[in-house]
Image (cartoon, rainbow, N blue to C red; front, side, top):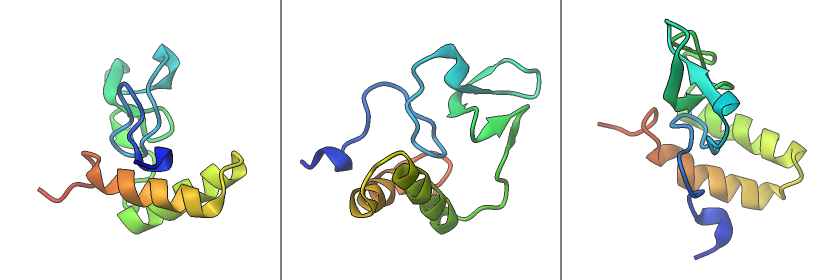
Amino acid sequence: MDQAMEFPKGPICQSCGMPLQKDTDFGTDADRSKNKEYCFHCFKDGKFLDEGITLKEKIEKNVEFAIKMGMPEDAARKMCENILPKLKRWRKE
């Protein structure tokens, strides 16, 4: 399988897919304790920082960020379109 299509090893943010490796990567719940499912970019004080964003908008936002980080657009789009819909925040239940 293409490496860009694989899930990262270890826990990842269930909103954006960012690997959660260090204590500082985790978002916070309303009581300011660490949230084990979401990163600090997505979740703070028990709320999503981008509340109301659609999955399609989140994919575009993440593609733009990945491009700024040096990833080619086609690889970034493939990765985001493969991973994000499978995350807890975006799964249709």
